Image: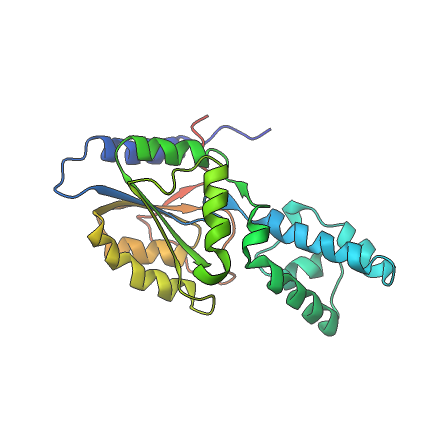
Length: 245
């Protein structure tokens, strides 16, 4: 059972709803949400892929199969190499083979179905949308490999999508760096309305949003982040999830 959300989290979530509800600006209020490690926990995606690999190698490599069997969602790290080290897999050639297997599947429509919504996320995003905001999903997922699966997953989990007042922005290709992509995409949101809030799991992205939109409420989801990430700006709020209770 999870502990109740901190008062600071309740304040931030309520403040964004209040800003949207009271909005009188000439343009629409825009609230931006990242997807992976923000609205969704994508660790189950990695776990599913590694369990499929385990089934494939079980007959020929019992040691590897047993090592992979020890994995649980809570032990999935940001870097796959760290995840593998955590279950005793260190051999460079084996890590390379597993990484290739994982990469061929992780960034595809099919496996997005394994993702799990962050606690309270569907309800909160719906509340933001119903309060009058344009909901913008700004994600490092790419259009060629992940657009169809992303739309389906958002729909299936009850997030507003494919209706007036929603935007879904993905990278044109998987090789573009996420921060560079968001640095270029954020200014284009002026075509939609006025950015009033921004939610992301990467401190660098939150700092970027705060620098570009100093009056916006910027919140960092304290889930997973790239190793060596910078500290969040002092004005960036920190949330565990999207729960009100």
